[in-house]
Length: 456
Image 1 (cartoon, rainbow, N blue to C red):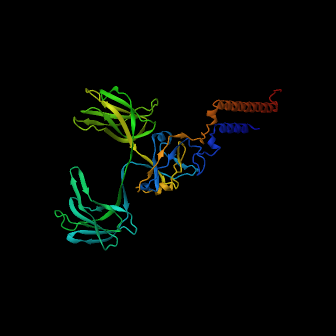
Image 2 (image 1 turned 30 degrees about the horizontal axis):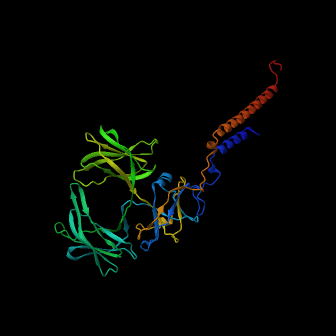
Image 3 (image 1 turned 120 degrees about the vertical axis):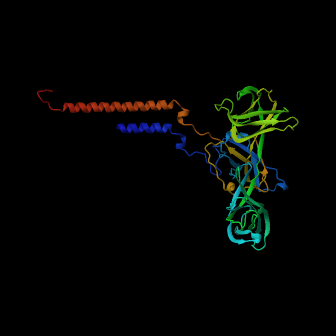
């Protein structure tokens, strides 16, 4: 065998030994429907909700607990819902943070005219089967005006009903431009809208110029917060802002728990204290505490004793550290702490058999997001609301098969053995090549003719 063939064999051997098992086998990260969930190490059983005549909803839901955040992927893309027959159940994952959504509704101007009392009139056609709408924003170029406006709706552009009437304002103030050029009204599906904008009696001599109008559907998405008690540690004397301070460690009951708000029960009657909140990973981790919020708490004598709250951007943490700056005052008597975050809600279709059991699987770090059609078609506002189910305690998945480790991790000595063997092979090849080169040189030297009196 030639030297380059020996070298190729050695390189192939090293590559084979070091290659991870996924090179030779398909990973079970993305199972097909009905495939055993061997790559998901944990599951929680979903208790079927109690069905009553008052809860006739086509949907069910449940709320994720902190244990899921510890064991699932950070983005929760590895959640899988299966029934006991092994069928995958589509779901929608929603973060129940309160928000206002404003979606544009297409509208076409089909009529402009001069209305009564020197008003400017504009009509809009929202099309057949128009979507629900409840706001119109009027586009006008002028500044410094107060103009009365009336909005009407109709299904046939003949019979009109008043939807809203209010003043439109735009003024240039010291702090900038102040304006309110929108009209809101109860949700409507009228195909036609007619807008009249009247003259400002102080500034307008002609009918006002209306460039156009935009129609919107504004929806307030209701929120839902999950509030849990925190484990409050003992007070520790410390210093902050170059002054005496008190600090308390708050355990959240997990390693990756969402927190957006804390509420602190303080037993003192009269105080004003600056404070800040820090977040960190579990005890023993290398993650240091980092400040996430700062503020001032105040309570006057005689006021009702309510929990003092601190709201901040959501963070994931295992521990919080509350630091209160005392200066020359006695430390506060902190009795308890609770924390809150928007609910992570899993919504799925109501099962045909209420007694059917579901399982929520998670923990596969290599899983891909499912992107179910069910989630993308689900209405933003669920009416009637889903019937709430409950999750049981987490359990290990008996079908789970850990991902095989590379041979270098299973047998760390193997790499040295392989490299040593390859080194010996390469040394043998080099020695053989060297011997052949010497033999060739000697043969060529012996065949040279004698010259200049030299005798061989």
